Structure formats: structure tokens, C-alpha cells
Image (cartoon, rainbow, N blue to C red; front, side, top):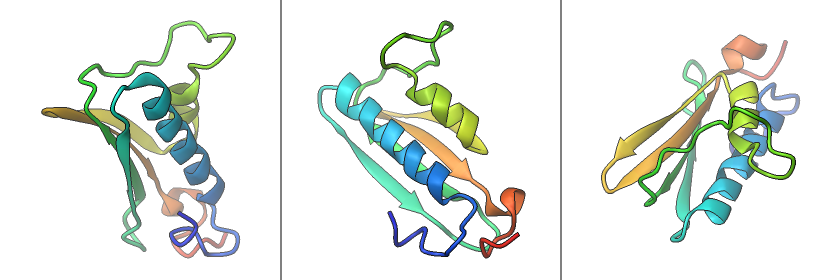
Amino acid sequence: MDQLLNVPGDPIADDVRLAASELVTHVVTDTDDGGELRAWDPRPDVPLRLEVEDLDPAFPEIPAQTPSIGGRGLSIVDQIADDWGVAQQPPSKVVWAEFDRNRRGGADGSD
């Protein structure tokens, strides 16, 4: 992951790392068969995209009430990603998040 985020002062680096952690944690704790994390960064004009694919057909949802322990991962992703969603790709689903440097201070990571 750090190879994608190796520009000093990259405005998306911390949020991408946090979102990757939350998405992977969801797959590990809430599915039986694990999943696959994919990330790509087609700089400079396209957002970095994270995807986590798993075989659980249930769509994850942000809880209406904040749980006291756990269950906040998608809420965090919703707050820090520029866009995110869930796509059905039978027999699996993909939860994805995008991070746009152009919205946050430039494609080269500078302000």
C-alpha cells in the first residue's frame, strides 16, 4: 500500500490507509471466506480506488445507531472517502472507496 502513497505530504495517504484497514477488518470479522483487497492509483487525474471483494452476498450497511463496540468501519469510510459504494458481482460483492487528490490539494500531493 505504501508504494501507492509514497509522495511526501500526499493529501490522501492517511485516509487511504485507514479505509483499507476498515474494509479489510470488515471482511475478516463479518465473512466466512475472507476476501481480496485491490488498490490502484491511475494518477494524475483519476482518484485512487480501493476495492474489497468477498463472497458474502449480503450488502453491508451503515448502522442507524452507532454501536458501542465495533461496527463503525463503513461510517468511517463514508466520512473519509470522496466516494464509496457496494457493487454486486455474482457470486460476490465489492465494497469500494475512492480518494481524489484533486479535491484535496492537487494530483502531486502538494497544496
